[in-house]
Image (cartoon, rainbow, N blue to C red; front, side, top):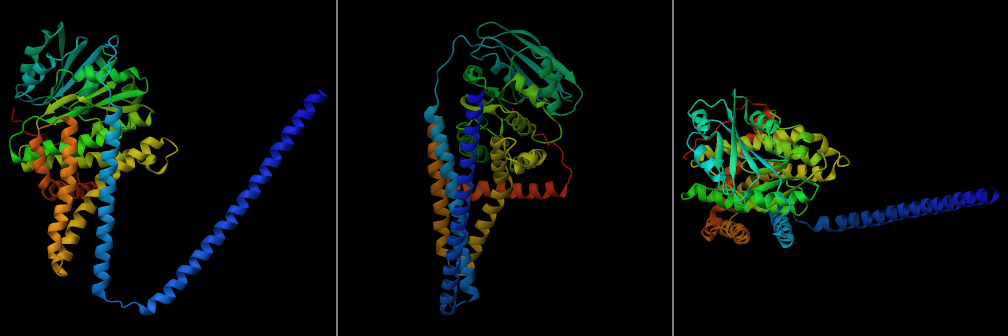
Length: 462
């Protein structure tokens, strides 16, 4: 007992000695900081006193300098944003592997929510029956369609021939109550341990499932985001969107996937661990971006989310400007609603630092960046015309076009896409992105004003 007491006493004395030294060290550091900041402040004050009388101030000079400083800051943020995406995307591709586990072939339930999809439902199911996978089922959820969707779906019900075996196709008919309720209805009767959620107008590539499910051998992965590509190419607007999906969306997902923190699982293709959906509480109907909302809740629950570029879904993009703006209007307001719903994580990173980081990225892209982009372009054009910098407009446009051209070449090469899309990079930012950003800013204003909105279904060409 005596020996034990002496050991215990010595431990307490050592701990006390360490604490005392730490406190003394902190005091010295604090005094040093005060001394350094004081000396720096005095130096800057003397510099201002010395230089101010020699400075010639004028409104014109002040505006010119403010323009230069503003544009330098904008370009700096633009370059950091672009190169951060490119670097992290490259790091992701550098670690990407095609390694498969032949013994891992879990059963997958494919959920297809449909509303007035009579033009393309047959093609969608046909693409699913050609999947290079054996263990899956198809569940069609008719969300109160008022066209011939139900009749077409009923003809498809039953066991149909797939590549390896018969595939069961089921149908749920329900009253129209939104995409999220349709997805939940399908998930709740599904038999699979993994759930593939898609849109009714999407067509999957044959290797979509087999390339995605292999990542679930990692028990930390709660979901895998697929690669969305534009199907109806051939006109100016849809080709620009094809480039946007490759450069603007998939590049960002590649960069996020390096940290396994993809912030939005796209509606046209997302593969989930059913347990992750159940933990997150299924899809909610209180936002117009149910995909973003569910993704954030899965991340908040501690799951990781990966991006699989070989798990491809081809979707029909808006073919008219009106349809495009309607789509982006809904996307922007839905993302802002999702951010607002998870605002607690914005100000408290101790809950889930990864989710906080992703939310700030989403807030920057949805709210801050569109305003900065529009303001910088308007500011530069006004300054160029008002102060005789007109020759710089071309260099401004050429610099941004060159940056987009470089990014487009990398993105197209990484995905082995059509090289002709690179040509659209010349006008991508100065035309297409400006139009989309105007829509985003107007959507943001309406969201903060609380103006009611409707889903706004896109018209399908088929």
